Length: 98
Image (cartoon, rainbow, N blue to C red; front, side):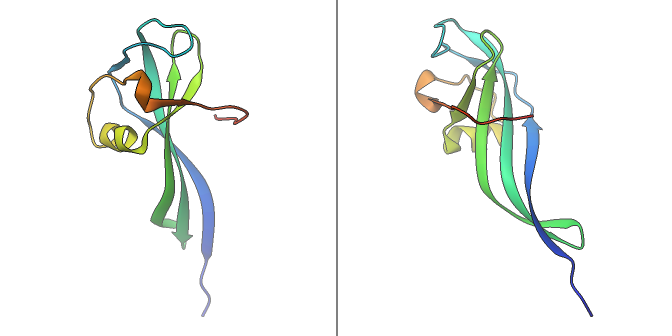
């Protein structure tokens, strides 16, 4: 008997219709797309356990990417569409995303 086990990174776009109240880079209110990255354990190609979740927002005004606070990102994943405040955004440097 053998087991097929693997660990891989995942990416998921989250549905979000809110806005950023003030973009930290350019200072104007704008829309954004929100996505989540994570690490997942696969057992026979079935995702069993996710960890290392991180949430990001990409602005529509200047196309910059910011990491969201975990609390706000988790709330968005669960369906919260309230606006994102500048204090909930952290600049991200030198990371490539799809």
